[in-house]
Amino acid sequence: MPSKGTEDIVKQISGMSVKDLADLVKTLEAEFGVSAAMPVAAAPVAGAAAGAAAPAEEKTEYKVTLKDAGPEKIKVIKALRALINGLSLTEAKEKAESAPTVIAEAAPKEEAEKMKKMLEEAGAKVELA
Image 1 (cartoon, rainbow, N blue to C red):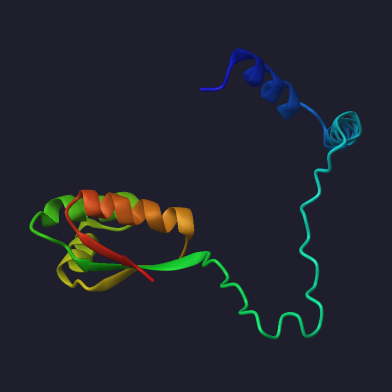
Image 2 (image 1 turned 90 degrees about the horizontal axis):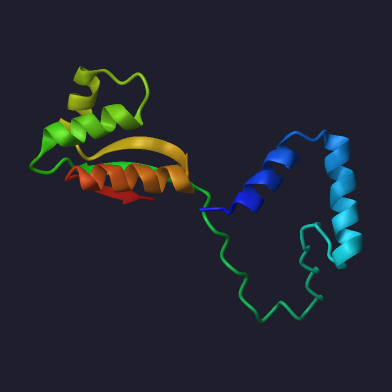
């Protein structure tokens, strides 16, 4: 839990205008000798990267697939309804019974992991791809 001082600072910052925030960043950079700019990777020198394998890009979107609803389908149906806005009871039941079925096509990593955790806690088997 953040300290009282941290909460006060966050509260003050949230009330600042964009111009004031930009000035604050410049002042902090000058005061502490740091930069708020994102570091940029240098382009590889020609020939140097020829022998090195390119690093794999981290996946940002995942397909969430319900592989098996498990023995407690009612809990899985409730979890599906909680995860997917506007999903009717009938639609959730159909998804649970027709496993394997895709729950989300391109969910952000955090959301996909949340879906997987919630469904697995309900007794389902879930795959992220």
